[in-house]
Amino acid sequence: MMKNGKTKTALVAGGAGFLGSHLCETLLKNGYSVICLDNFLTGTAGNIKELYRDPHFSLIEHDVCKPLEPSGKLDFVYNLACAASPPHYQADPVHTMRTCVLGTLNLLEIAERHGARFVQASTSEVYGDPDQHPQREDYAGHVNCTGRRACYDEGKRAAEALCFDFLRAKRVDVRVARIFNTYGPRMHPNDGRIVSNLVVQALSGRPLTIYGSGAQTRSFCYVSDLITGLVRLAEVAENPGAPINVGNPSEFTILELADLVLELVGSESRIQYMPLPEDDPRRRRPDISRAHKLLEWSPTVPLREGLQHTIAYFASLAAERRPRKSL
Ligand code: NAD
Ligand code: UDP
Image (cartoon, rainbow, N blue to C red; front, side, top):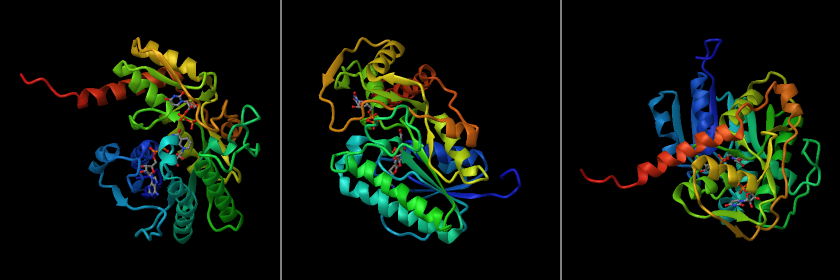
């Protein structure tokens, strides 16, 4: 039950993914009924298996590119449906663009029919390879619309355009979070993103793959901080009327991250340098003054602590997969 005694219902598209499963879990804890909508492209049944115990949780297996009419009354629609790791979203770029554009449109129309509030999981990728640093929400970005990342970057930009058209037309109360690199338990071990790659490699004694020189930077947000920000954006009474950066402003080079992972795992893996992918942003750090002011939010989990939780998670996954010795 919510504080006012009424159960609210949230549809979480992409709810079986890394962030989506944490969001479903938090919303259930906060007294919501949760409908997870996912096509299991990159999400897994394992991510949500514990949630089935809760009678307020249900699953619809569906591709958001196709229209849908969920039954019952929805109060919130969260759109997290989209592969987020470059190797995954580039595997079928046309489907990624469809998911971003048609998926967002279908979900906005559902929110409109239900009079539900809509939260869009946008991304720091809308800033592309930024020539303003740190990135504020009023920076329009530096994106290559013909490169390999464009299906995602430009797809997410088009999705934001749709969101703000629905908001301006007063069709849906839309809120847009620009999420910066987030990490934590339930990232897929083969996800291809930097934190999961380095941790899995260090734990298994394989070389740590560094693309380019490793001097490029990212700012890493632990998943619990991110989910708190996202829910606060959904629940804040006044519509911010503009996108909001949600991320951790502590910035690290990729080599600094690799050193920290090696230290925390106690691994002697070596570094293996590999070519830098096309259009790889050189640096990234959010300016979070807007989130701080409007949501009274800022992250609390330092990288060292968040990495310790993440390493423990991947170590337990590896232990589960190792064949047990017979007694
Ligand atoms: P993820 O790949 O773990 O989760 C995405 C989920 O969406 C998966 O469960 C997948 O199966 C589902 N999905 C993909 N296409 C779909 C479709 N067409 N129909 C239905 N379901 C579909 O990624 P994540 O890290 O959890 O990211 C979630 C959202 O947050 C994404 O929209 C992503 O763009 C955004 N985001 C994430 C990060 C990050 O660092 N994790 C950063 C910026 C933005
Ligand atoms: N990266 C790397 N080794 C890896 C995976 C990624 O050096 O095994 C680099 C990647 O080129 C980028 C940074 O780490 O510069 C973050 O990559 P990720 O895919 O996690 O996120 P994004 O580039 O979308 O921010």
